[in-house]
Image 1 (cartoon, rainbow, N blue to C red):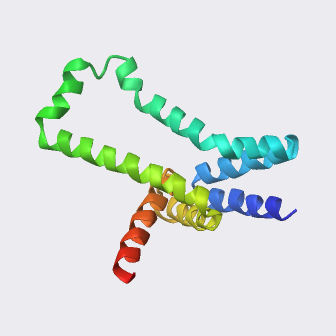
Image 2 (spheres, helix red, strand yellow):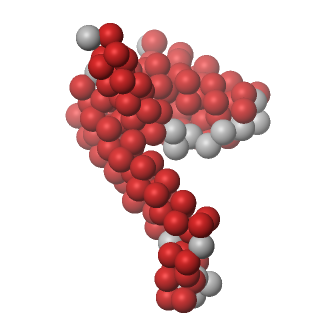
Length: 151
C-alpha cells in the first residue's frame, strides 16, 4: 500500500506544481504496478532507463532525419569554438552518465536521494528529469576527489 501512497502523492504534487512529467511517470508506475506481476515491473525498472535514453536520442535526431541538419552542418561543428566545446561537454556528460549508472547500481540508497532531488528540481525549478544519471556521475567524481583528499 505504501508504494501507491507515495506514487499518488507524486501524481498530486506534479499536478499542483504544473509539471505533468512527474504526474505521468508516477501514474504510469501505478498502472504498471496494478496490472503487471512484480517480475515484469522489475524488468521495466532494469531496462526502462535504456529505453528512455534511446527514445530521447531518437527525438534529438529528428532534425537529421527530416533533413534540417545535413552533412555540412554536422561537419561544421568542428569549425567553431561553440561546436568544439559542445563536443567536449557532450563526451563529458556521457562519461558522467556512465559513472552515474554504475554508482546507482552499486548503491541503491543513492537512487532514492537522486530521485527525490530530481523531482524537487523538476517541480520547483521547472527542470527536465534527465538528471539522475548525470547527478550520480557528478557525485561519483566528488566522492573520488574527496577520497583522494582525505585518505
